[in-house]
Length: 152
Image (cartoon, rainbow, N blue to C red; front, side, top):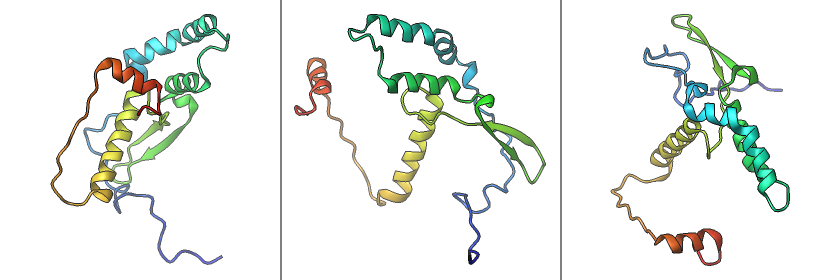
């Protein structure tokens, strides 16, 4: 097997991983939020009531339960982490894995939104002026459109 002529870099900008951490960096703490506490404490009750109140007795769809369980596990060191070390100052910290979900977790949703916006601006959209248009519908029509994809 031939070695790579170019070293493999997993950085968006070369040298970014070797730079010192900004002093303003603060790891996120999803367990400290009110939303996380409420979901963590009441998830089992919520899922059990969903089973009781559903006509089929199955409860919520699997993807709903998975979204909630992944949110509770987001940022939990016992579920996996990466050890990060600053080469400049030697400071080390543990970075827990995130849930990477789009629906419930505010920090993961914000990160994805920011990454997507940066990608669109840097890679997709040409440098040109843009005008934004917004189309809205009355609430009654929105409910119909949400339920019937053919109508959309």
